[in-house]
Image (cartoon, rainbow, N blue to C red; front, side):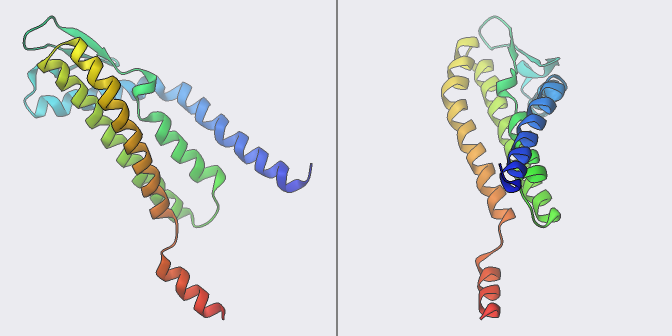
Length: 176
C-alpha cells in the first residue's frame, strides 16, 4: 500500500469515526435542545398545544384528541448531518480554512433550521389532528422535506466552498 492510499484511508477513517463518536456523545443533549427550541418557537407563535418539552419529547395536546408525547428520535435530529459537514470540513477537504468553516456553518444552519421547521410542522399537524396525523405527516412529507433540505445543505456547502467561475476564469487567463 503506498503512502497516498494510506493517508486517504486514514482521513476517511477519521471522518467516519469522529461522526459516530461525536453523535453517540451528543445525540441526547442535542435532541433535548431541539425539542426546547421547537416548543419555544411554537409557544412564541401562540401554539398552546405544543409548548412544553420533556427531555427529547414534546407534549402534544390535540384540539380534539388525547394528549401524547412526540419523541425526537436520533434519526429525526439534525445532528448527523451537522456532524457530517463538520467532519468533511475538518478531515477530508484541504484549502482555505475560512472557506471550509463558512461552508460548514452555512450548510449546518440551513439543515438545522429546516429540520426545526419539519419537526414543528409535524407537531403542528399533531395538534390539529392526533398522533396518527403526526405520524403520517412525519413519515411522508417530513421524509421528503428532510431529503430535500439535506441536499439543499450540501448544495449550499459546495457553493460556499468552491471558487466562483469568475475567479477560475481569472486564474486560467493569468496562467496563459
